[in-house]
Amino acid sequence: MRPVTVIGAGLAGCEAAMQVAKAGIPVRLMEQKPSKYSPAHHLPQFAELVCSNSLKAERLGSAAGLLKAEMQRLGSVCVEAAYACRVPAGGALAVDRDVFAGLVTEQVCSHPLIQVVEGEVLEIPQDGVVIVATGPLTEGRLAQDIQRVVGEGTLSFYDAAAPIVTAESVDQNYAFAASRYGRGGEDDYLNCPMNKEQYEAFYEQLIHAESAMLHEFDRPKVYEGCMPVEVMAKRGADTLRFGPLKPVGLRDPSTGHRPWAVVQLRRENRDGTLYNLVGFQTNLKFPEQKRVFSMIPALHDAQFMRYGVMHRNSFLCSPHLLEPDQSLRNNRNIFFAGQITGVEGYMESAMSGIWAGVNAARRVQGKSPVTPPPDTMAGALLRYISDPEVKDFQPMGANFGILPPLDHTIRDKKARYEALARRAMEHFEQFMEREL
Image (cartoon, rainbow, N blue to C red):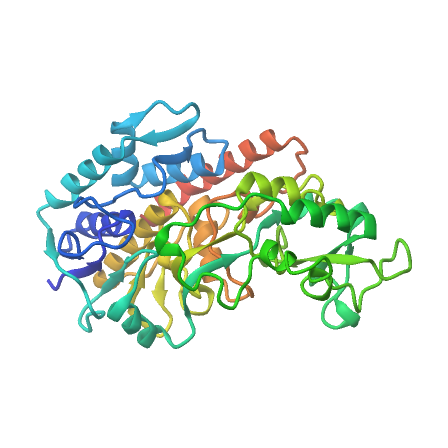
């Protein structure tokens, strides 16, 4: 039997390799370490954690906890290793990074059906089924070959993303739905107006807010073509009012006048549960984003599902390229997995690897692809990255905002999240019994 090729032995690649091998199919796992390291890595082991040793919340009533519970049900090698080397971190699952990498490496390398091939990969193999799990620092000739395979302009190299908030947390008393000059659908945008006094207070806090430190490998060209809102603001008090916050073509129905400045929110998903702040790419620290952006009247109690980021990050425009099983629409033998697909976070990356591995194995076996229900956390993430209706694609981590709403209203957030998690696990178990 021809082996499935997995490129990259990060969390996604390791999970993918293990799922294919569990299906009884040989795997050729190709990893450039230790002959070559990316700017962010230094350990020779697989599944190296770089930025943090925290794998986020553990309780089932959290988005991160729900995702890990689903992964554990599938025999995730990363979740198993994490629990084996956890360190005290309150309600979060934090790990000893070196031990974690060692445990995953041992599990992968000891599997009799997995052959590890060391050395840099310069192009996607043309034969057999391939899973590309090369991570957010993919570069060089391999990046050029991926660009060739998926099409020019569909692979980004820097992540300049605006914050994303839940629709239900936007105070509608201070917002109105309208498109500029009445063009487009009325609900395409939510507009958050500010008067002169509100804008000037917001502006002062914005230009003095604290920015996050960039890694050295994040610095080159990071601001090309997409300037952080706080950098733009420092060019002058009216720069934003003639840029992303321009009020022209809009009239606030509560006053009958054009606002002094307007922050526009654009729908992020087809269900309209998430909105992103248009033009608010930012490098501010996360607490600063919460503090300053909450000064916008309609966002005074906004719930941020993702904060803005600006850093080195290679990722596909997946909604235009990938099927829900993470195979390319124009070549079903090539799968992508991990952060290069636009999922964001360690466990999200590992989850993506699991399902790419499951479906790559099914591809070899001649079976139909499977993806979990959209009201599970894994299913919602896979749906998000493969939904062609997502217009302004930004990488996304696990959050309850991407799940379909419940069929009944629960106002208490904690109780609502627990109900969403119970529904997800119930439907996940039904799916497992029916499909796997």
